[in-house]
Length: 208
Image (cartoon, rainbow, N blue to C red; front, side, top):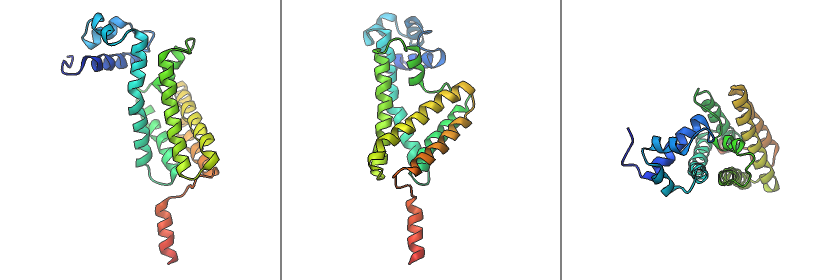
């Protein structure tokens, strides 16, 4: 049963997201999206000028929730900044153990649109990845990494997106856990202040 109380645009986006996740963007027609959303094709085109615009809007809608989830996993993890970043990878490994897991939607769509570099969905995907990278860079700057912050953020992004691809290929989430260990090594080898403030407080008490 369709939720008629949900705004029409959001209902269309939700339906498109479900179908895109299940079958990919090329396999899904506008007719199928309209049917699942419980609207006419004309109504769909009133809210979105084209299927390309709908795909881009779908990715834009996923941008903030995905980044927020990474930030939540980071903040909830215990230990120093290296362990907190590793916590993101370990949560992703747990997600990958779900039979319905299909990797990173931003990367999957970039593969389907590989011959269309100017596609609005690719613009949205690049913007999301850059937001995640900038957030990591800010974390490392605040942790005292100095000039190492930006290269370190890029290295973590390479581990993230590389592990998405390899786990999807092998269906083995342990690659994500290996990437977590690699992230810890990279961060602790940098100029980031990789310490746990709780441990420092304990050490200060002992010295007194």
